[in-house]
Length: 315
Image (cartoon, rainbow, N blue to C red):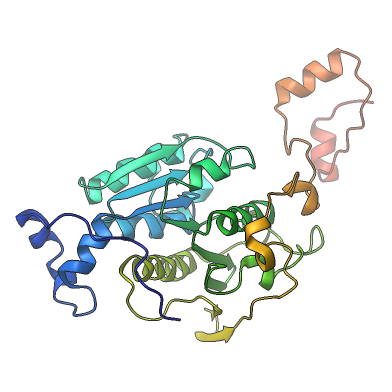
């Protein structure tokens, strides 16, 4: 679908910008006007992980004027296999800080706004309202539905991507012009049916494939060139090296975009997706404190028998 430019053109390019973006300027569909739109754009990337890494790096190289990053996680060694915006020396560092440093190394002219927080219904609308385009680089259903609903309420385009093992998908959801995420997935899958990255794995290079599609769609939205993936989903099979595009229609009964002007955020997205509100882990020190306090709770040891023989908590 062809859509007018999302971003107005900024000031005339400087001599340095003319040199830096020379390969963009000779593309007829982009040119000087398109690059001025890019340098005037404000894009928020939700997540600085597998998908967020290539998205942020390519948008920074393209000269997007302001890049926002929201993430509250720290770099873990297991991230480095696919999250290429972070390096070995960044282990233990906040992802937003590591990503900002890499972006500034790629292009010091890009303004980077970091948001060290967990996205929720209390902050999403105010945060999203500051940006032209939202890029969904998350890996859980609760946040995807939250992002979608906020974008519908604010009439913002959402550039979505999803990855699993060798497979990936990408689309642009914008209720003003086509379906939203809920039109494709009215309800989340049953709990435990779709494993996350840690459980199911993902090929590192797949993140680059899908993330690059997301970056390209973002630039097309900014400049108004080509046909964006509104109303279409790209399905990529890396194992068979097959890519297809399918059409997705707006659901006239969608609980969110069918009446966008009256759309509201849900009270609890994690409950909607069947996610427990309990903490996913506690430290050994916290467990020891709970045992010493005499608290009544059930501890389930799922280790192998030989591990239990070596060391165990009696009870």
